[in-house]
Amino acid sequence: MQICSEPVHLIPADAGRSPEDGTALCLSGGGYRAMLFHAGVLWRLHDLRVLGKLKRISSVSGGSISAGVLALSWKQLYPDTGSHGSFEDSVIKPIRGLASRTIDRWAVLGSVVGLFGAGNRIAASYRRHLFANSNLQDLPDEPRFIFNATNVQSGVLCRFSKPYLWDYRVGKIENPRIEVAVAVAASSAFPPVLSPMILTFDSKQFVKGSGDDLELREYQQRLVLTDGGVYDNLGLETAWKRYKTILVSDAGSGFDGNPRPGSDWFRHTFRVLMTIDNQVRSLRKRHVIGSLSPPNRTRTGAYWSIEDEYSDSSGQTYSLQTPPEKTRELASVGTRLKKLSDDLQMRLINWGYAACDRSYKRFADNASPPAEDFPYPEVGV
Image 1: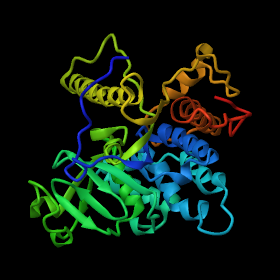
Image 2 (image 1 turned 120 degrees about the vertical axis):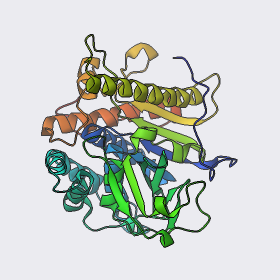
Image 3 (image 1 turned 180 degrees about the vertical axis):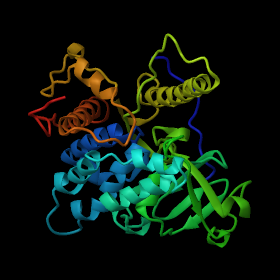
C-alpha cells in the first residue's frame, strides 16, 4: 500500500504537544454495521484485559453508539472494588436490543413532513432504548470518552466529553450536562437523512477566550451539527497526537464501482461528493497504516478493518475461521439504523472480535493469547 505523508490535522490545543504514554481506541462510523462490529472489538479487548487500561476512546457515528453504551457501563464493568459485571449483559445485550429495531425510518419521514427534526427523533430513540436521561457528567473520568460531531458552520469537529463540549474555532463549554443520547445523536447524524442536529445555547455558557476566529455570539447560540464521520470517519483526530499507542477499528464501507452512474444533476452531484469523501477517508487511512508499519514506523498500535481479508500466508494458524466470501458479505451491510436479524448481529460481532484479535496480536502485542473461539461459535462469520 502506498503510504501518505500528509499529516493528520491537529487542533491548536494538541499542536506542539508530545504524545503521552497510554493507549487510545478509535471507533469509526458505519451505522448498525459499525455498532455491532465494534461491539465485538470491545468484547475482545475486554477479554484481553486491554479495554480497562485505555486512556481515551474517540468515536464517530455508529462507533459512538457502542462507545456510549460502554461509557455508561464502565463503572459496573471496572469498579474500584468488588466483582466485575458481565460484559455481555452490560454492553452486548443493550447494543443487540437496539439493532433489533429500525429507528431511522420514522425519523426521516417525520422530518420530511415537518413534524420534528430527524436528529431529535434519533436522540429520543437512543434515550428510550439505551441511555435514559444520563448526561456527560455521568461518564467516567478515565478513560475519557469523546463523541465527535462535525460543525457545518465552522467546518471542524465539535467534541462532546465529560470535561467539555468544544469546537476550537467557536469555543468551549466546561462540564456540559448534555444528555448522552443527544451527543451520540449529533455524532451519528448521517447526512442528508438524519442531519442536521441543531443545539441551542446561551453564549455566556462558553468560556471566554476558548475559541479562535469564530468565537462569536451567532456561532455560539446555535450549533448546526452533522455526523462526525463527515470530518473524520475514523475518530482519529482527538486521539492521535495525545497518546503514543493508537488502536483503530474501521467499520466504514468501501466505495463500489458503478459502470453507469446517474447523469442527472442530483445523482451526479451525490456521486461526486461520495468520491471526494472516499478520497479524504483513504488519505487518513493511509497515514495511519503508514505510521504503524515498518520500516518507517513512528507510532505503536494496530489498525483493523471490516474489509480485511485474512489468509494463512503469514504462517500463523488461527482458530477463528473468517472465510473472505463471508466477511465480504458483512462489509457490504448497509449504513443504516435498520433492524438486523439475530444471525447477522452475531456474525458482525464475531467478525469484530476476530479482526481485533488477529491485528492486535500481530501488530500491538504478539505475546497476547489468541482467542480460542468466537463469542457466538454456532454462527461463525
